[in-house]
Image (cartoon, rainbow, N blue to C red; front, side, top):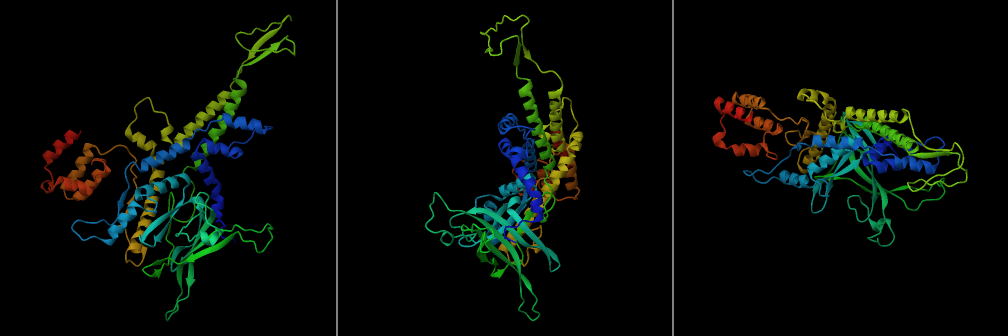
Length: 516
């Protein structure tokens, strides 16, 4: 099999990914898809179809839904726990490493918060993404991330290794590369004849293969182990014109390397999958699949509606009793004159329910879009609605968002565990628990903060010793009681030692009445 062979699940979901990309990109991308998204009418010519498609408009409820989902998850900044420098302790190498990593996770200037947003956006769009963790040699000597979209993850395999199910192969398509790319192993002198024109770089498609290779043991028991190996493949420029030529090679191996950590090779592939429900290699259904289907149906109905309006709503004159060869112009300064008795001149006018049927069908699709998740498209009610009723009505969307946010939180936490492991002396990344690194995306999508009764109950629990002051302050931060951007530590420092004791019940009741 060639190196660019794809996984069966990739072949199954690739059309859905392409459809989602086009819909999210908007009207131009959907219309560029032509008959894939808008079939031709029977006996319609190419010219007629072009006009038929041009008259249609694409109401992009899918993109607005995706933006609304992303906005709800990042309505509050994610909670990120990483090693940090402390004023009363000497500087830590881990704290400095994570400080550099959080400011630039991919060597392209992307912060950790922005990278998390990119991952969530991709998972919402197509339900799949991946991150490869690698080590940058040279002056920086630090871990960094490479982001891969669903279409770039061509193939993968999992095997049972030492009682665990681990990735044993990942094939990643990295697109066209040019210039001196030290991370990929690409060298212009190796691949191209002559100097590269900086304004016309010579590019070639590149594939990165990550795999575990079995190694023979050298100890007394000679037990075998596994070695993480990276291969760089490039598409050849010179190909035989004869398809049956046995010497024809579409891809050739350019470079092979073994990533090292503390002088030892890795025994696992540092690649993390991101998905809406789990971080396993298996491909999941797109979160917006149903919305995309309804959105495209709405687009086709709109095309038929505009097509019908074009041929029925346009004023069309008809005459009877005029010479066939006569030229009749329409306008206020023009009169039609004939000597034929009983001659008539009128306009055709459409009557009936044909176009109304299309209008009702489009209204139904817009309601379905709202039901399936796009509350941003739903019209505001003219009467009041209780907060409990609103939350109950939106529980379906919240459950989808909560599942997605929790899944991405787990995969991003796994990513930080790899970063921590690579910069530390821990034996395995699995031994790094959530007390050292943690990412938690927002799962509270209610716009209602804590009310005075809830604040009073939290403070009463602190007074009774049921919760700590740190827990109480964290509840206030999540309940949007604390000012925007203020951390728990900053709030405790602002309170000061003189106010560290629990307030009296009388003072508590006074504060609650003021807040009410």
